[in-house]
Amino acid sequence: MKNIKFMDFCAGIGGGRIGLENVGMSCIGFSEIDKDAEITYKHFFGQNEQNYGDLMKINPDDLPDFDFMVGGFPCQTFSIIGTRCGLEDKNRGQVIYGLVKILKAKNVKYFILENVKGLMNHDKQYLSQKPH
Ligand SMILES: C[S@@+](CC[C@H](N)C(=O)[O-])C[C@H]1O[C@@H](n2cnc3c(N)ncnc32)[C@H](O)[C@@H]1O
Figure 1 (cartoon, helix red, strand yellow):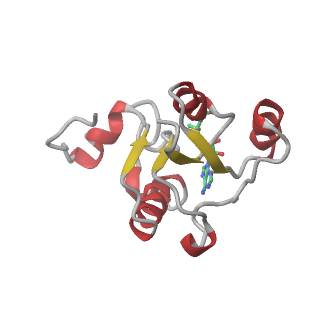
Figure 2 (cartoon, helix red, strand yellow):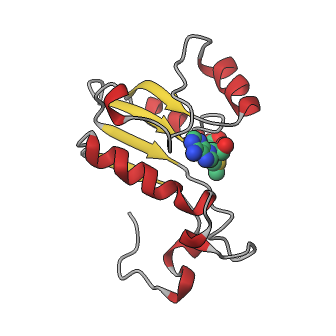
């Protein structure tokens, strides 16, 4: 695992990162738009950690190469206790497309995208496979 480089998207305060570092992977950057979350993240992981900012505005060419993506993207719009606008939500519902764009552009082989159960059946679309 030591040679596996990952980037932490929708990083929050770094819960996903902790898990991957615990199995020996190396984080080479993160993306987070919330300033308070960024302050906490840097407090935990170091002031020199690079935040690439809003992933919807990232040019993938500006990112270093990496093997693994972790991203706990916003769930409110998919949650059964939210509005369930899903992908129609012009802000939070679209973030998954930004992640997929980066996955494709950087030819990332492995990823974990974390969300809520409602993602699987929003808009009455039932995904045929459960995520792993
Ligand atoms: C469910 S939280 C992730 C929590 C994270 N897994 C943790 O351990 O703290 C989603 C995060 O995505 C961030 N976010 C939302 N849109 C974003 C975007 N376009 N680019 C980067 N981060 C974004 C939010 O600010 C929020 O911190």
